[in-house]
Length: 150
Image (cartoon, rainbow, N blue to C red; front, side, top):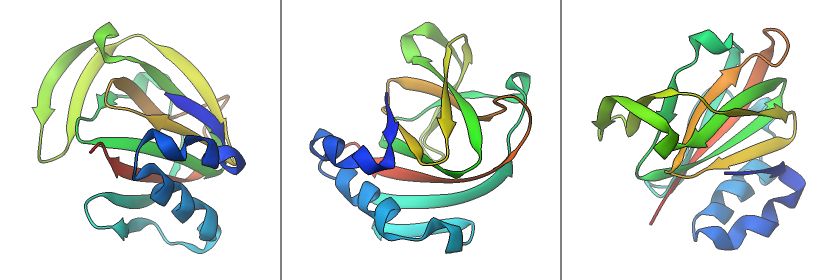
């Protein structure tokens, strides 16, 4: 997992050939004017979901991980906790669903505070629970960019 401010995104362009496309989308678009929904960036290689929601208590969160995609989770406005740990520290409670590109897991992990302007890059080995309350439930506008692993 990588966590940083969007202004430092160029430091991570070489991690994956498609990662730079996702970061450029975040930098060149005025996210405040994008409606919630899916945005194509580079076909199945890179696409984004603009989300608007209220954060939730940790006990309502569900551990997840992915196989084919890296997540860039960028908080445009609001703040949240993102729980994370290596998937070897979690137990699979629902086998990988290739159609949903999703593992359902359970266990314990750490939390990172994502404020407005910050992102986390989550790789297939990073189990995570997004959208958690930092101190209390607050509205968040976030973009999750899906970047093909290969």
